[in-house]
Image (cartoon, rainbow, N blue to C red; front, side):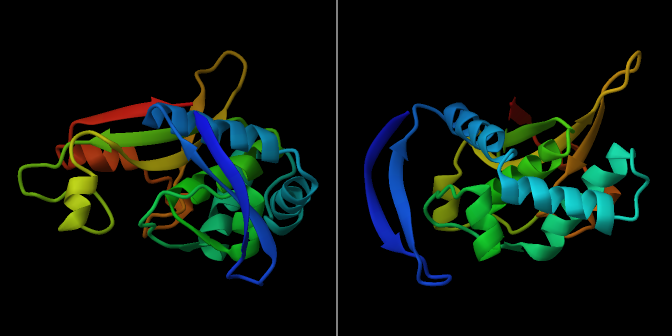
Length: 210
């Protein structure tokens, strides 16, 4: 990854000055690695830590040690409080900025959800998905159809979507993985798996999981 120079810009949210920096990635896998590092960095910040504990332990109504319930409630909170927006140019914002501006695309939903869930002690995976468009010309197993200029941008098996998957570990048992995709048009609590959606559409899916 190569960084460009830093520059300052005024936030459209509240007019505050924010630092912006461009980056060039050698691969999309490296982009996922960058997001994974961001989760690791921000999961221990006071704002993420305190908010997540309040949601999981006070607001959720879950039993105190029910990590499964806590992780789902955090995903539901992100789905309820953050608005999904499409990006023309790929931009990564920190989980703290996503909390402040209350919008983002799947990158922001994934990194914020993972940061919050990991802050309560539940490890997460970032699951990035890529697939070839099926024969019917539709490029997405969910959401909007890829057409026009976007069809060129998403040509081939580029990574098109990313979501957070919580991993519950219990001694002597296989890990239990919970897909917490807050960008879908169905409740996070339904634990809808975007990978299963894509495979059911007959897509040839490849993943990067970190």
